[in-house]
Image (cartoon, rainbow, N blue to C red; front, side, top):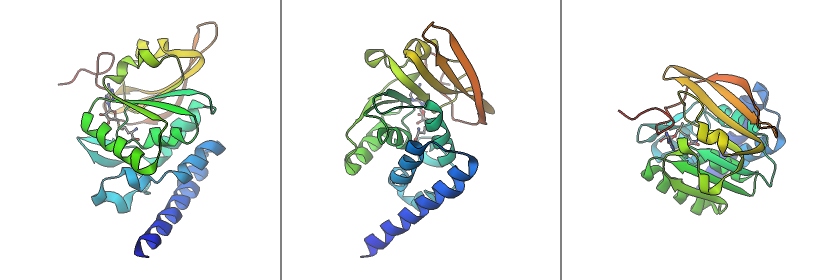
Length: 222
Ligand code: SAM
């Protein structure tokens, strides 16, 4: 009974999150709002911080990494403009939450994380929730996932010094790459769209601050 009451409370908190943090800031895409209102964010947050799961903030998830602020997850999801049949690559699995959001919108999601312990925890969450359309890999996401390319959308949730060429190469015609580019103090969140002609159009969506993308086409690890 206590468990059921707790679940109801999470549902209420998640509903409030969608109304006060997402809709109020201009997120309109219905599949994005539906996914944000469905996926239990508290399942991806460490147990000692669980009561903060629906707050308007990023939270630590261990290994010096974070689960992004809900608004930023929604903004990036909406910006990716995905349809059900799209192939999505999420780079920086972290807690697994952002990939879980995409998994409620598209048929299949690929996600890469460089820290094996985080991948293991994320996989555990997917198993618990019965989310069986997310394929995880431990590796350097700055190089993409060439064996599964092309992707209709690639979403990077770590800040890169420049746009990794491998990621642009792995976009399908019309594919979108959402990526924060800048330095440790802040980044511009970019959307690059690869036109059928091969030309790449770049838009700035927002100013953000992400942990670094560490890898061959990212920052070098110290
Ligand atoms: N999307 C995550 C979520 O929903 O919890 C949040 C990601 S966290 C802000 C950024 C993640 O990117 C970290 O877990 C970090 O280890 C990972 N990362 C950094 N460089 C990477 C790389 N080259 N390849 C894959 N993951 C990387």
